[in-house]
Each structure stands twice: as C-alpha cells, then as structure tokens.
Image (tube, rainbow, N blue to C red; front, side):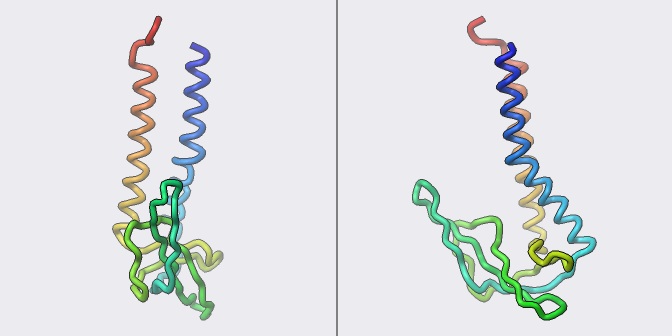
Length: 140
C-alpha cells in the first residue's frame, strides 16, 4: 500500500508540475492580458520547423508586430501545427506593455484550444485516480 501511495504521489507531482501548472499559468496570462494588455495585429514573417524523435515535422509561426512605442518585436507561437503557416498571414495579438515577451493570440479558437487541453489533462488525471483507487488490487 505504501508503494502504491508513493507511486500516486510521484505521478500526481509530475502531472501537476509539468502539465497542469503550465496550462493554468497560460490561462492566467490569457485573462491578465485580456484585461490589461494592448491589442495589435502582427503578421507571420517566418516559420520554424520542428522535428520530433520519430522524424515527424511540425511548424511554428514566427510573428512580427509593432508595439505602441514603435518597437518591432518577434514572437514564436507556442503551439506547433502540422501544416506550415502562411507567410504574411495577419494574426490578432494582445501583448503586455510591461513585458512585451508576454503575448497571446487574440482569437476565440486559441482560448478554446487552451480550455480543451486543460479538460483533457484533468480527465486523464481522473482516469488514473479512479483506476488506482477504485479498481481492486491485482494479486492480493
């Protein structure tokens, strides 16, 4: 039983630290910037190609935008896509005037995707929790 609890604690720590905490941090940033951020429009100026261990390619758009004080900034999208983004495509952004490296995409789909990721991880967590505590012990 002690090993079971130790395993659960380790699993929960990993889930919270590396999966849920960054998503909730991103959600808090979203709400902060929606209230205090500056809206602007940027455009995709370059594409970063990502290759994983299975040689699977994905792409991240690099967006260039201008702040209210005419500073030109570049921002690499955090989520990679299977399709290569269109160069020159306009993107609605919100940035933090106090820290211009804090940027979010100002589109309904971006927020919805973030919420879906959080619920997906919560369901995984609940499934693991239910499997550990509510299934009978195997082997006695």
